[in-house]
Amino acid sequence: MYGKRRAASCLAGRKKWPRYNFWECIRTHRQMRWGRMAKSAPMNVAVWRRPNSYKSMSTFEIEGGVALRGTVRASGNKNAILPMIAACILTDQEMVLDNVPDIIDVRHMLDVIVALGGKVERSGERISVHVASLQSSQISRELCNKTRTSILCVAPMLHRLGKATLYPPGGDVIGRRRLDTHFYGLQKLGASVELGETYDFAVPHGLRGADLFFDEPSVTGTEHILMAAVVSQGATIIRNAACEPHVQDLANMLNAMGAKISGIGTNQLTVEGVTSLSGTTHQVCHDHIEAASYLALAAATGGEIKVEGTDLHSYWMCRRVFSTLGVKIELYKDHIYLPEQQDLRVLRDYDGSMPVIGDGPWPQFATDQMSCMITLATQVEGNVLFFEKMFESRLYFVDRLIAMGANAVVCDPHRVVISGRSRLRGTTMVSPDIRAGMALLGAALCASGKSTVQNANMIERGYERVEEKLLALGARISRRD
Image (cartoon, rainbow, N blue to C red; front, side, top):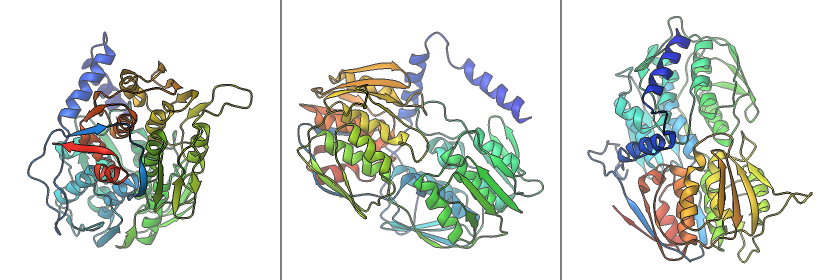
């Protein structure tokens, strides 16, 4: 049934896209999504309440030509806190999470908790989530559209209610983002999956442990199935699992709740199921993607910054990529230092060939760090090929860089050659997704003259207080709602 429904769904979806102009359809689809983007009110009250109204689009205005200098502190990890909020549904006891970033995606996930009947309180960087009882087994279309991680609530809802219904989740438009790993894992653990206008899940006989092998090391897939496995009957082995820092952090939190997970940090996780989980207090790990973004922007502007609140093990590959671009960073136990006045030149391979910077599953270079590195490359002498293997729409923002004067050749949806150093000029552009939006901010900081980056809300889905942090580093940036 799953295969037939999925095939029918795919065919139905294809009819909506005129085949004669694929790129125009992509642009139209993005514009439709941009128009629906929302900005929540600040969470500065004790009890979380969903904002009554949203503004559709904000704008950043930047005067370029100023090097970033100063100190910035890394925020809590976006990709860790979102599944952690979903995991709060696994227990009827109170969960307390510290170092929580105040970003739009977190607000949307908290909306989901409240809509399901949970209670949320926030004080600064600490949130308390208490889902004593679930009042609904369905997540609305509106909430599903706002956050892709809404699907992570399915496994906890199956544990608590035995069923769950949601609509196809939203998220960044960066190419095909398959959910097959989620469906495969849930089915192997005993859940039924019915795909149509809604996604309907049920566990007629309860979740049962199984031996799983993922066809790709999906981050959200690993997080989701891990949440299902910890409350399944018997043992579960997840092979070819993702092992990014945020996956490890979620696993550590689940263990603190009473789960029995071993193999954390490797691509094979072994889980001994338990009947119930308790509440706990957990500090969210820092966001290594955000930290690398600020380092890339500072290097591109010729600046000098210190990023506090980091660790060592999250940056080994990132440092290798910076080195390829001629950037030296100094790693310490709790911070990273980027010296100024560096001679930025591409480091060619030993045989003299043009280097290739490609992304991949951890511990390879993270796909979310790719966009800001491309902006940095426009300010580095030499040629470098970027190979984005994971998302076919990740590199679409490069045409904005070209419009600003970057010397770039887009080979195909997955590869682009950057030849620097380019003199960028200010322009008006629209942020297409979280990471590309931050990269465009970086390009505006490097450019001569004034630039306008529209759809700033998109950037704020993943970067906390981005305007405030850039101002503290000396950027000439202002926000217009």
